Amino acid sequence: MAASGRRRSAAGRALSGSVEPLKRLPVTPQSFLDRFRVPRASSFMFPAVPPTWPGGVERPPLEKTLGMDYDSEWARSYPARFARVLVQELVSKPLVHAVASPTVDGLDRIAHLDEPVIFAANHASHVDAPLILSVIPERWRHRMFVAGAADYFFDTRVKATVFAFLLNAVPIERQRVSRESVKRVADLLAEGWSLLIFPEGTPVVPVYVSGTRDILPKGGNALRPGRTRVTFGRPLRASPGASGSSSEARALAEQLEQAVAALADEQTTDYWTARRRAASATTPPLTGPQSGAWRRTWALGPRDQDRPRGERTSSRRWPKI
Image (cartoon, rainbow, N blue to C red; front, side, top):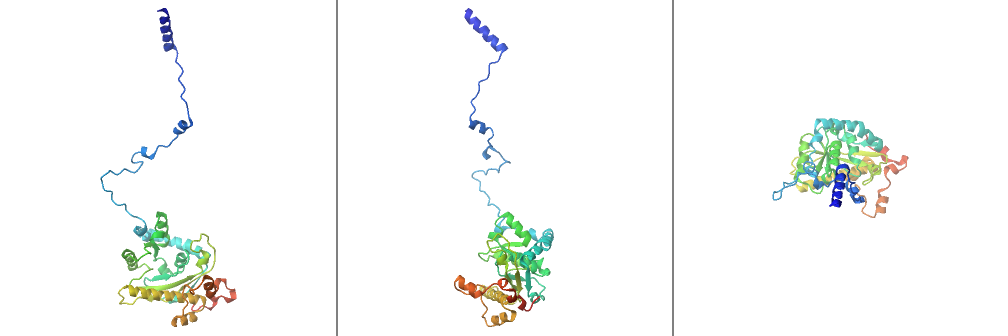
């Protein structure tokens, strides 16, 4: 009894006057890292994460905003047009002319036109579009739109915004001619904008560009300054009674291809030689001779900018502006 009483009194003194030390918990590397672990997204709730969709309820289709569905109308608003004029005249045009040093021929052939027109050019480089826009007369330059491939220029939000602003580009399907693409272009032409495709009665101006391939080839990522030449041809026009059939479209396309090939021949020879060959249907094709690569290069001859200065054909061009 006495012993048990002494134990109770000792326990009482311990409870009333002292605190037993806490037991130390083992700390492992994993437990230490867990203190700084970011909670999983599933542990967050709306509005920190998108809301869940209730089961059994049909989800509406997502609104498409890229590709052919990209709305470029904002790029033709007055603020966007004003800003684009400043960029084109103060930045793009001086830069392109510094890099490409363009020589322009044939402007007298389109001087009589005062209506919306279609400029159709060969394509060899990403420099082509800004180069042509920089040399087209001002009465068309600031009322131009560029047809851009929907699957390339409008596949991301950033690219779509940049090209819509800088080039006033509109998305067009390049794999096929869709009703939507044709309507989009025709509507802009009817509003007084100039460029592309095949509406009845609209002048089509063939354009041939050379030299841009050496400045920035397709797939290249470095600019190499050089000289370029842009030649405008006489405008072509669909017949007033054209019905827009596929055969008439092919005929106009062939006529346009021949006109661009004649402009290429004019750049490498002279005006009269190119006219005589065009009249006799002996204009060299744009693709060059159909043979091996070395044979094609030999037959096509050296590029004008690679010739000795005394042998360049630019001094023999006529008519020249």
